[in-house]
Image (cartoon, rainbow, N blue to C red; front, side):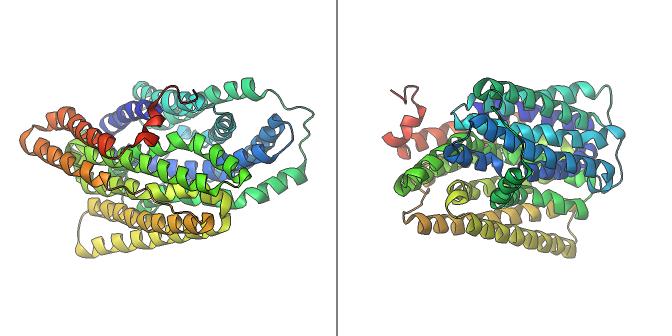
Amino acid sequence: MGFLLRLAARLPFLFIASRMYGKESLGRFASALVIVELAGQLCTLGQKRGLAQRLAMDGDHPANSVADAMLLSSLIALVFSLGLYFLPGLVYPSGEYTQTDRLLVLAILPATLTDIALSALAYRYDVATSVRSRAVVEPWTLSLAAGALFYLDRTSGLSAAYILSIFTAALVALVPLYRSYGLPSQWRPHPLRIGRLALLNLPLAAADAVEWGTRKLDIFVLRFFAGDGALGVYYFAQQVATLPQKLKTSFEPILGPVITRNLKEGNFAAIAQQVSQVGFWITAAQMGIALALAIPGEGVMGLGGPDFVGGTGALAFLLMAEVVASTAVVSEAALVYVARLRNLWVSLFTIALQAGLTVAGIELVKELGLNQNFRAAAAAGALMLSLGIASLIKSRLLARVLKQPINNWRWALVWAVAPAVVVGWGATRYLPEWAELLVGIPAILLVYGWVIWHKGFGPEDRVLFRKNVGG
């Protein structure tokens, strides 16, 4: 439900940003956001996943552990915020920005605290707060504020809306955190303890940053090879394509604590079974969404306006990248606990491979004399290839560490894809563009969903959808 709510809120924002602000403003916003979000990832220092392990092992007062994590991340966030504020050229390489745009760095601290708060709440199985904060308040505030602020500041409205959305999401997360954990008890910040926590979390922090970086490296590279307009088109396609990737985050809050508890008990077989099962759920869902958005891709990109239709090729590659990446992300959910350093090396190899393929693809497009939309498609194709290779390597690595098979592939996916493709082809061939979206997308999802439910989901999978799981 959280994923569907986030989907419903994200599309209006893309429509408002593209239609009202234009592709140049959207591209400039995307260029700045990739740096601000990178800073936020580094500030959490791996504690989105590391905190669950610490709460499971630490005999200290739980609120004290949360306070240590928040203090450490807050100090790092303040350093990043001040540095980027006084060096705006790192955020806006084109040199075009307003005073409000410079204030975008204010979002780093609340975004970091929100991540830690939601991780602490997830450890106590409170996933509802994550849904309220990330899937309801943040995206809907962003969409509504972007629409309203357009009439007050057409130049910096997107930046102001983003800042407002991050602060409101933080408020929604921090209040339940206080109610659940309370205030620290006899807590005294200690530099050595905080420093040791930082060192222990470095492998996790690097893995998180690299995993995040694989989804943003394409935009970072395109900042130097494409103008703001082409970057805006690519960002539109990326935001549509990463909607399936948001589905993965619906399972993250509960998968981490379950894995840490089984590790504590030494139950490797249970971990392998959970990773494979959740991997199939995510792959199946992402495949259906990818088909529904890729087949009528021109109509989907046309929602942003005529200038955005040229990004259809990039959209198709990006959607497939999310499908092939599902094995890597669920494998990494366990690898960060059982093989941190090896997982980190694989992640570093992945991002280096992606960087090389991206630059090589863009240079090839330039040599062939093709336009900037083909550069965007080349970057998307590089992402798909590198994530596919990472999935193979990480699943094999986890299987070797656990001495258990890891496999999220089921032949039912083929049975479900075939009729969905036929339905989608018919919709694009015989229906007008508006009907492709209003009728074709639901039809593709309906046919795919019906087949995958009956052919792919067994009794052990369907228990996920019962209300009385506990009973």
